[in-house]
Length: 214
Image 1 (cartoon, helix red, strand yellow):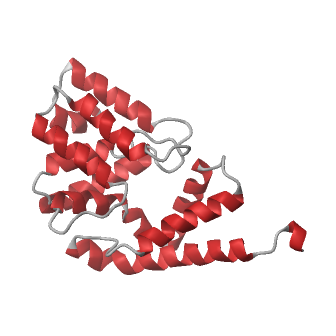
Image 2: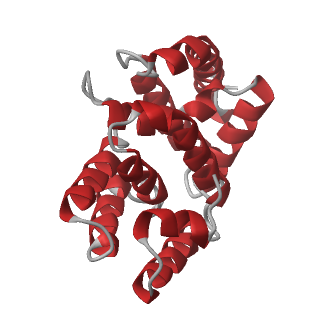
């Protein structure tokens, strides 16, 4: 899926306000501190949402939620999803109807835990698309993990290892990583293998003796 204005205009219309909002959204995704949560990630999620759109009762809302799901991304904060959802509500007012605004806001908030309720097909499509990177080939997954580490360059190795370990453990305790039958069948095994391998690596690093113990 393209991230050009034409793709946006299919959802939000072609008006001066829509053009201004599209430029602002793309500008946010282009911030220099982003190493993984960048325009490439946005394009990837939009593309997968497009492939899975037939499963969604409201594909337009899911596509819009993809545009906004990490529009606010500050690695030093823990409320990025809430800020992104609020940004979506403000940015979409007057461009789409209120029901769509509310659904986009709900979907963006859902990406904080990636745990849509049973039967939430819109949420399943967005969350599955957002987590698709976990099921990539080992080399692609390693590049993703390295990019995430770069985004958190302000953290020491010790702190990052602890926080990243907690993230991986939470993902591995979800009822399912992927909620659509077709994505679950295609991606689950690879994602579990990648997550487990990274978690094992992080645990081995945290178990290594520090300078004072060597």
